[in-house]
Length: 273
Image (tube, rainbow, N blue to C red; front, side, top):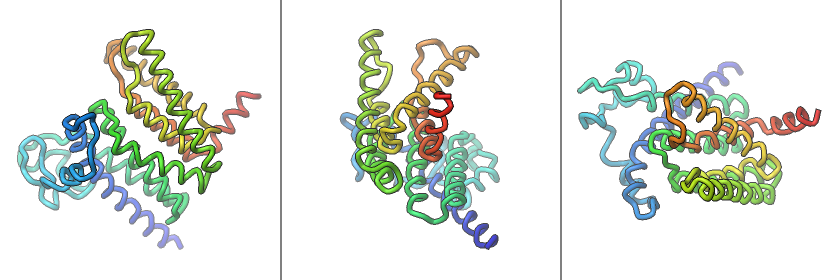
């Protein structure tokens, strides 16, 4: 029994790391396509072509990577995070994304085994990790990554949550709330405070949390967002008013509430005394 569990965790971790490696390619090659496409709408065909060709290579010297230099996590450690040819650092994003995806796969397997629920949750976490990587570096939330979250969230709530109605109301409420806040900010400050991608992501994640947890989802996103925006300003690393990606805060709040659905009930009881 212990051996089977250890084998399962090992396989889950390896599969998660491999998927994380693929997500690093997505996070690197998708933003230029978004910026070059009319209206930022990327079609699946051009995206698949971009992901498959050219092969993995160093972004600095464009030297193709050998298979032994492209093993998730292990190659990064052995090469000390540098290109074998030009010795330019790859950056921490690659190994962090691979490690986070591997940990997500291991954690879900440990809790739920090889179940359909675990597979849906892994899809959520993997897409959110890719979105965070893109948003943190490029201030973008591509529609082609955000869009699948909505039907997946509707399916998840239907099978394991409060039902399709709660999911639809959550999606509509999340979209409307972020759109309204963005519109009010634009009217009062004469500039955008929330991007269209943030609004769409809030709607898609609203389906995952459902209407019953929507208020906690939004509160958690804005609370962590204030902390994330305020600390760099207090430390002198960012000027007040500088743009800050909001997608990671939406992702964090939704992931916590979906993975720990009883948290919202506990918080409600805590406030009620």
